[in-house]
Amino acid sequence: MMRNTARTIAASLIIAAVFPWPSASRPLQKESPSEILSAAAARGDRLQRELRDYTYFAELTIQTVSQADTITGKYYRVSQVSFDRDGNRRERVIENSSTLPKGIYIGTETADNLTHIYHFMITSETLNQYELNYVGRERIDELNTFVFDVKPRLKLPNPDKSDKSRERYLKGRVWIDDEDHCVVKVAGEPVPVQSGHQAPNFETYFQNYGRSWFPAYTSAVDFIRVEGYFNRVVVNVRYTGYKKAGAR
Image 1 (cartoon, rainbow, N blue to C red):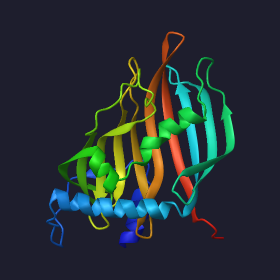
Image 2: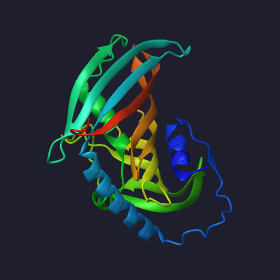
Image 3: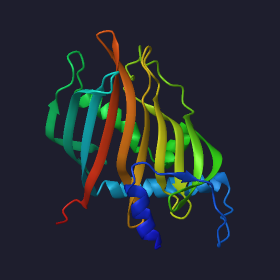
């Protein structure tokens, strides 16, 4: 199977099975963890610059599910995302609707906070912000990856007191393709967490566009107490229609 075809299949699967690293005909790369991260940061810096030249659609769906596994409400938003010359994210909301239960309100700011950390990439900046520890190798579908545990090295603000309570960081794990040195999967939770609230665990898969890997799909599960009962909240985000700005 051609590598590009394998990449597309791997990225399109919502749930990718993880298998032990098999014996390979080609020699395994003998890069040190620091060399892997240095190469990944260089690629991440480049990907961030490339992403500024693209527009894409973000489709966010949030469903509340009762203890009886019944869907009790749905929040749905579709937006087109682009970037200005300074790299600032711009978003044009195309559709925004909600049938969530009374007592649950999700506005644009809340939705942005939910999705901000899902796009985690290793860059020169994140190497300064995070501690990354090498775990080993894993094979995800047809992709050979290096795996690192990730946690913030910064002192996190108290989300109940600080004006910076909107800021969230990743605590979890990243998978880096062993050839392109791009992040192809992220899993974990946003931190810090407000008191009395359980942080949502999430997974993000990235899709291959040539030699670039952009976010493709995110899934997360959270819990919210409504009128004395816990409701499970299922979050799904799809990123589609990547197109260079100005291209037809």
